[in-house]
Length: 386
Image (cartoon, rainbow, N blue to C red):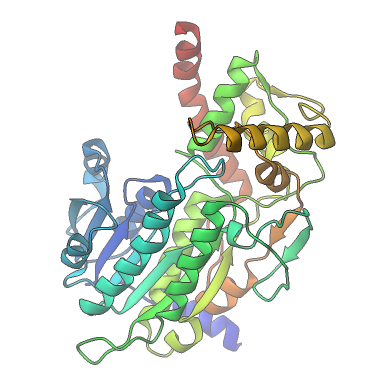
């Protein structure tokens, strides 16, 4: 009964009258969250922060903004003056912006500067400007998988998993997450306290997912046959972007409630939904098979041989580094990630912030496939033009 009351209570919370800052507001998840805030909350103002603000995105929000003021702010997450100005008078910060890199193609100084230093500067700006709630978008990759490919099946926030992170992306997201959680309870100049939490979504899919678009592009170039990079038994549980956006909103509602802040604040939450566990490659096929795309029966190469080739390419890349930067298309850690069973539960988020997926698997799949179908003619034309 207590749980039922809390879920209803969380749902009833509102960000009415709040000023919300959304970093990475022009990105895949950022756009979806802003639209959700406009459609469901009576916020006073939404500040969309991005390094490059796209006018068409701002225009697309016109029909659902109502009385909410939407301000687009273009700047660098590493600019402390820009961040202080953006946070001035705000009450909630959704920090989504980051560099996503699973090929180690970005220099470490660059990815650290954005993912870690940028987060630290935003936390400092939030404290200086009396922001009371800070929601950080982390990633499942702060957990692993580890280089041994040790599996996790239906894990949770208490799962003991020994991992030495290899990707610069994973390392920097993990450090930024830790800094966010450590900032929980910081005293604000006005005497209040900052409340923080971190959300760890699984692989996010849906309309606008550039990774899905890239896989479809590769399939078109391969005569409508999708490349198999993961074995069928390496099941993961992707999550639909609309449900991830909802989890962010539920977290902000919970942090606003003074009674719940002590429960939610300083905590991390896995965000998944009811998408059936499936390998990365088979997931691509599930959403693209209605478009006439097929998939290879077996991986491109036997996995052991693939690992050896990746090792050789990584060594060659390292030897050439003093003269030129060569990025192998696949590395051992990426291959491990694609071939390790790695699934996690959203039950803690359900208990603490009242998160329940809004979009069923059937609806999420339909929306994703329809979006890919709308992009398919353009991708085929682009391929023919080469």
